[in-house]
Length: 143
Image (cartoon, rainbow, N blue to C red; front, side, top):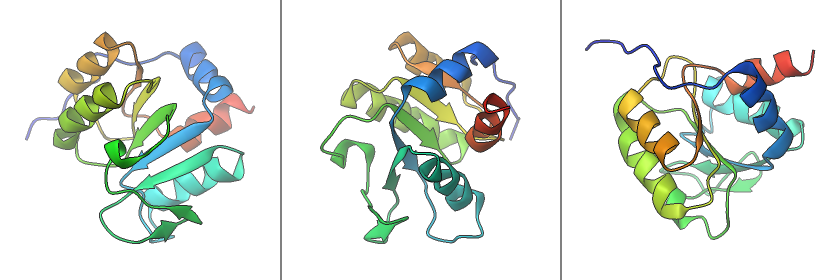
């Protein structure tokens, strides 16, 4: 499998604006395992005041929040979708973001790049971040 370099990505100013504007973050692939990055990163964001909405195939609650099986099951708007899945999974996630509507940010975590999905999300009006850790970027924004 060939690795992609992100051809669609946000700059530092856009990332600052993301953290200043989003309130509700759906996390696709949020793990119940507290040793995994896909648990540590959302927990960090939750502790900084963001509402985290877990999307995971099992569990009823993670981080004290109700778990949904898909983005489209969430009965309220989310500002950002933060993705901890393999690059191939980003295409259907982008489609779900578009179908859900009102998603402002499509964020693929460190090591995750899918330019076709990113372009689709951007063309639908979302700000796109790829191959960056939201926890690391948030820490940088805080000084």
